Length: 417
Ligand code: ASP
Ligand code: MG
Image 1: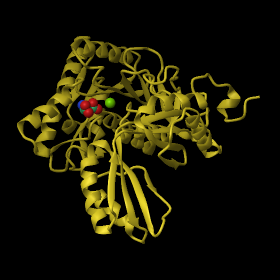
Image 2 (image 1 turned 120 degrees about the horizontal axis):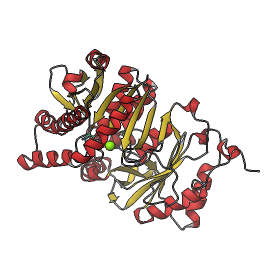
Image 3 (image 1 turned 60 degrees about the vertical axis):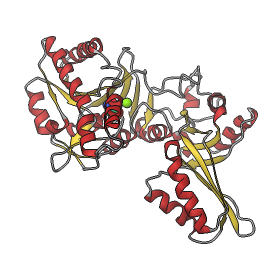
Image 4 (image 1 turned 30 degrees about the vertical axis):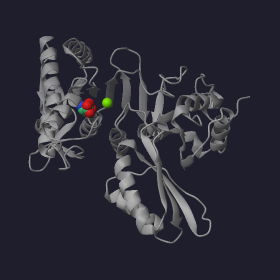
């Protein structure tokens, strides 16, 4: 008998028919003899609706009350799912974040999970009940309701799986798994059977939206096996697992893109010690998360500094950059919103050279100009003009032969015979 945490996203519980379909699936698993903790999101669109209600009431809603409101989306679906499971003759009980003992810090809207009191859940499991748990919400040390940030139910599920020592955390969603690229962009994208935590972390942070980033870091930290799969199909999805267990090590596992960044350039910055600190400190203090940074070789003691920021933060980033430029005597600040970041990710890069050059050649062949480059141990990213996003993804997917079934030798990263 296994202990399984299942998480169903907003589309999976989007209406009462779907909730009943989820209940059937849960009951099926329960009848196989497994203990089940089922985490649910709010119905698709519900959290957005609540956000809009708050914003229509005040331009600057109080964060504590905002969380009280947002948490109601999941409170609806836990009750409805428990009702549906019970209607099938199987005992089930719903629990809000507070009732679950999901303790978080007190940063409303982006709270971090600190601990979970698993005893309450265990008691119900021991009595044979299915535990239906609200995702996305917790409580701080003062008993205030907190939420974990958009997409936070993934993190709730993985945190529960870690606290309970579950055998697997199944994330049921509206896609069949993690793909080598976005199938809407690259027609021959393939579903991956396995992916290592670090690859998934890169893919999640680079724009693949299937899992909330923090759920993957938690999974890695506690060794939770995460199985991302479709609510609407039976086939296995993608297992997110420890690196040692990933047999296939293609040099590149996937191609991702992110169109949500903008580029800022400060021209003519005096090239002196401390200049970069004076630019990036106020940005970070202003809550702007800077991603790719490039500084040119200086000419006549002056240089250009270019960096990317999330597009919604561009206004704030420019205000700060202009103030800093004035202080530093830099004559010009410019920006560009029509950029995209395209990346290739793969564990095999650790052992294999030449990934970057293959990537750049593939882009050159398509006439795509590279504006910025950044690399990590298992990733190469380029910033390009936004209108070339699809073209670049397809070219890279082809160049690294991601659409084709791999032979065993290629999986080891060995040259094909
Ligand atoms: N309902 C929340 C959201 O829409 C949390 C989640 O679905 O994971 O972001
Ligand atoms: Mg989600």
